Each structure stands twice: as structure tokens, then as C-alpha cells.
Image (cartoon, rainbow, N blue to C red):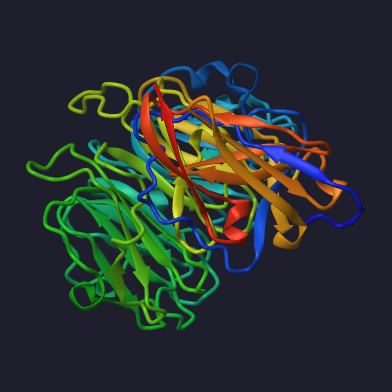
Length: 510
């Protein structure tokens, strides 16, 4: 969202951020926004963060407990807003109906009363009747489920249409054989499966489409990595991730060795595609855990695509310093509305069976500068909280206001919902009149003057060191302090200053 009016005058905004121990170090190179522009957000209401926690008012009671494993979003009852379906492990699956304003009521009675070890869910019209149906896959009790929608959000059990079973953890859907009907990819312990839809919602396994598949798969993702117009397949595995290339007709070849850098100490829970560096191709992010496999590292990985579907490690673009906590989910999404792929990560912050807490924050938001450089924007977006164990993160516009919202699905601890109140557009560097940064009483004081009053009331994305913030723009001069930890720290200021060489300060806080 860009600003449409230009007016004369001077506007200013200032930075107030609080850093944890050592977070203000200056060793990180500042991002380079070559397009000569800075993200600026336009809020729907005054706020200290881009998102507001509305959990208690907006989610039903069924969100407060349960082993919730995954969710999907779609307009289940055809009323023009986005509803939520939740897969629950050995408890009843849930349906939350949106009331049109991003608040939900429990509509689970509209689902068949079944209880299985549900692990993943997708919402898709399998029988071409114009409404959205539900597919659940299960792990321990080997019962995959298909619920058909009657057009009004009432479902009947048609699970007999999926005859193949397995220890299934993951599910993806797309038309793989180009017949117009959505097919299914099942990620299993053992051989993964492609189930082909006959067009009426009856599925048949065709093993020749994915020959030689084996391992323990926790996630499957489809995306065109080589730019040839068809969907390739990425497996997130406990025992080595794999990349399968589509021949155009829905038959896949395992080209992992040639295209995907391997790592022997990686137990992946989630894989995701997204163009993090703005070069027009799909990059990969692996979200890793220390859960079932001995001797692995929980450090996540970012792999960059060369444009032809060959990937390389991104050592120069470290996502989170010392990122070694188990993360069950990570999504590449535009969380702040500035048209680049940010990163939202869910960490194991609540002790679970066989999985102790190893993080002091449940969700971390890493803000992208537009070229694949990330800084921590958690405090400025959703804020810090540690009472959830996110197994799934859904970013969608639940309120219908054009601004992204965030739903956190938790296996232990409550689910959470955050409504977005601001969405970023762009502020041309030509609008920046002056940048002032100095040390005052051991803190860093930053003030930026703009040439136009037109941005009053907006939020601008700026940062110091490895922390990003979104600060309110005011017509007159505004000042704010960056509160430093005791000792002498160097703080590299970027943001509006990325339009020109970064400034380096050394402040002593005794």
C-alpha cells in the first residue's frame, strides 16, 4: 500500500526499542534496499505493534486446550469470509465459523463425530460441486478421512473414497496429472503416495508417479522450483530431505543429490517455499527440531534457488543468531504487507511429551528487507509470548480489512489469534530530509525528519542492529531512545538510513 498524496511540510518519527543482552551488536551488515524506498505502514488504529492479541474475545472455548496439530483456512459456509478447520490428535476435529469480523464461533457439530490421530488437514473441493470439502490424514491409527460439504457447511463422512492408508503425517493437494481435478500427496512413514482423483472425489494410488520414495516424512510441499510451469515436490523428512522434479505429467524423479545440499544432522518438521530475495524463483526454508532422532541439530536452514531449481546454502543470510531451538512450523509470508517474504517461526516454548521446552518465545517474526536479509521484528509485530507450542501458523485476512492476521495453532497451551492493525507500503527515500542519531545518557536517540506531512499517523519500518521496529510517524519532531544493556555497545542504525550509508554509534551505558 503506497501513499497517494504529496504535501509540503516536515514530518518526523523516532525510534524506541528495547534490546536483550547483546542484541545491539554492530557486526551485522545493514540491509541494502536498492529500490530507494522504506516500508511504511498505515494503521487502522493506534498501537505499539502491528498486531493485536484478540484471542480471548475472538476464539471459541475449544481453542483453549487440546493437541491441535494443523489448521487450514477457507470459506466453509459460503458467506464470504474465511473459516478455520483444525486437525486434533486423538480428539475431535474442530470447525470455527467466522462471524464476518474475524471473531469465531464453534461449528464443530457440523462435522461427523469421529476421533482419530489427525495430523494434517486440507480444504479443497474434491468432487467439483462448487463447495469446499475436508481431507484429514492420521498417523497412529491409519485412518484417513474425507468429509463432503453439502454446500451449506454441513459435512458427511465419505472416507471410503480414500482406500489407501499409512502412517501419515503430511498432506498436499494439487492437480498433478492436468485433468482439472485435485490430487493428493501423502507424506508417510515409509513410501509416500500420490492419490489421483477421478474427478468425482474418488481416489486411487498410483505408485509409479513417485517411485522409490521412502523415509519418515513430516511435511510435503508443492512448488515450481525450476520454472518449467509444473509443480515439483519437496519432502521435509526426519532422515534426509528430498526434492522430486515433475516431468510435466505428474511423474516425479528424485534429483535430491544434484539439486539439494544435504545435511546429516537434520530432523525437519516443516518445509516451505518462498521467494525471499526477490529474484523471481522459489527458495526453501527448513524448520528443524530435536525430537525423535539422536544427535541432530535444531538449527533451521535457508536455501537459495539459482533460478533453475538448484539450491545453495545461505550462510551469509543467517536467519536468527544462535537459532538452535526446535521449531515445529515456519512460514514464508508477507506479514507486514510490504510485498516481500518475511518469516514467521513457531518454537517449542511449552514442555510436551518427549519434547521439553527449549525456547523462551513461542513465535518469532523475522522481517525481510526485500533482498533476503532478515532482522528480528517480533516485539514490533506480535510481541513476545511463551505460553503456546505452535504446530501450525496461518496468516490470512480474517477480518476482511485487507490486512494480514495471524492464527497460532498450539499442541500444548492455548491457540492464539492476532488481528493485524497496520499494513506496510513504501516511503520513498526522497522524502527523508534528515537522519540524526546520537548517544544520550548511554542510550541511542534517533530522529528522522521527512519532507512531507502526508505520512502522519503511519508506521515506518526502521531498525538498530539486529532488531526491527515499526514506529509511528508524526508531523512534528519526535524523539525516542534505544535502551541499551550496561556496558559499551556499538549500534548500527539502518532503515531510513539505508537510503544512504549506515551510521555507526558507540554508546556507553554504566
